[in-house]
Image (cartoon, rainbow, N blue to C red; front, side):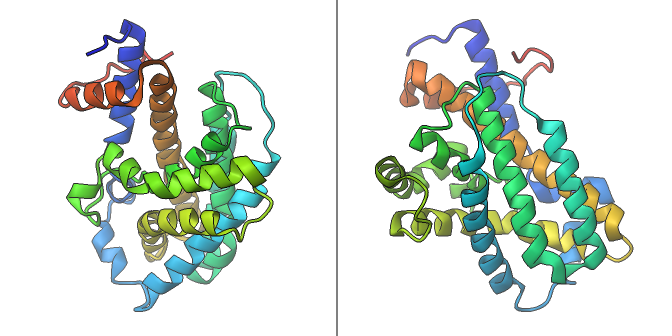
Length: 271
């Protein structure tokens, strides 16, 4: 097995720590002090269908309003805090107006998150003009982290990527050939649909929490901050790994990633 440099091995351990952390539901429960399962009981019976339609539409809007407007800038500093403030503001509005605001708040929040994800990709020295990087930004929304709602066999980082591989490759080839201007192209519709089915799990958890009595605008801001922070972590881990795969190859990185089980990252070593 190829050996990684000490810094690259530390980076990989950091990425694994981010990607294997508890899912969004656990983070929300810890923040609001109420088990997320209680919040699910407050959602309407047809909420699954509403979330599916809303998440797919939100991703379609985000692709065309976020990825197309970013410009290349080589820097290791991502504007995470700015994007968190923006997401918190949108969450406050959503929390004030409640569940009916989903159709407006979710696309706006998803667009902010996709811009933040792309900014993180850029900070890891990926080229945002590369079709594979554009699709990898979308792929982050499928990387929700461990969740009780997931099938345990499908929650591993590399397992999720393997399940998306063909759809992702088709979308990359399409974007490389024709760009992102035709959002209704079958290749893009398929990748958005497949990703939205997993992203919808986190959206359901977010909206369930926002439906808790007495949370209101402040609670909405807190939950949206957790929401974007969660996906910023997924993005950082994802793009560290993609950066290392360019150097060492995917098989090597996957084997070492899996061998790191049980090891803990020492905070402060990431560069």
